[in-house]
Image 1 (tube, helix red, strand yellow):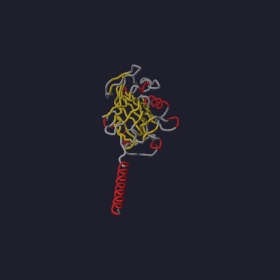
Image 2 (tube, one colour):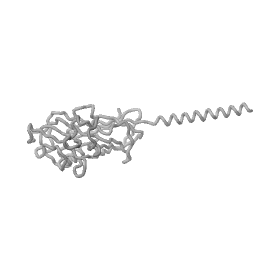
Image 3 (cartoon, one colour):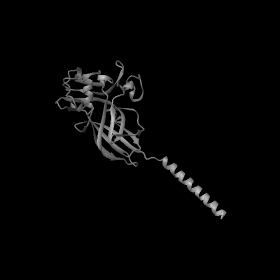
Image 4 (tube, helix red, strand yellow):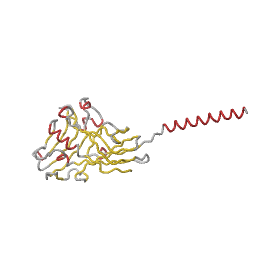
Length: 253
């Protein structure tokens, strides 16, 4: 009888140890879901081709030589609840001339979302923190050394409607405080998306260049071909490009 009793105790101990080990193993294997964000510059839903001639809603011809903007604080939301994402830097400099800057990935432990949010521009604290590295490196051509602050978004090109030398137009939009704030927060809603831990879910976000000219305000190239400082006109361009984004596609890879 004593032998049977000891055997029962030993068996229970081993069973308890196995259960604890299984629970510990499960606690360390939280599901991870990966989402790939791709910004696609477009004009009339067609991929932007640098140097090609297009027309805005005013009938003005133009061609783009440069498009850059800072995409910051990317987040996924489910019914306005922000999902925790990891593996992402604070700022991404999106550059239409460099394909490797147009996409990045985030990971989350939440499996459902119905909107994607991000910020266009650099936070005020980082505008006054001096020279920085990474995508905030002044060598990227997005920092005003004369004005201590970052260019939030930049659009450059040529148009026969521009009165500038060489028929160029250059819109360098900045300003981070008070009435001159050109930082914009973007939220793009979609139908509820359920993520799969076995594959990457891709979100393609269109950035329609024509909205720079007629998103919220009517801004003709013939009237405005040069913006290089904070102010009312810079804020109007910020209002316009804030509505140039839309979700074009969500799909698993």
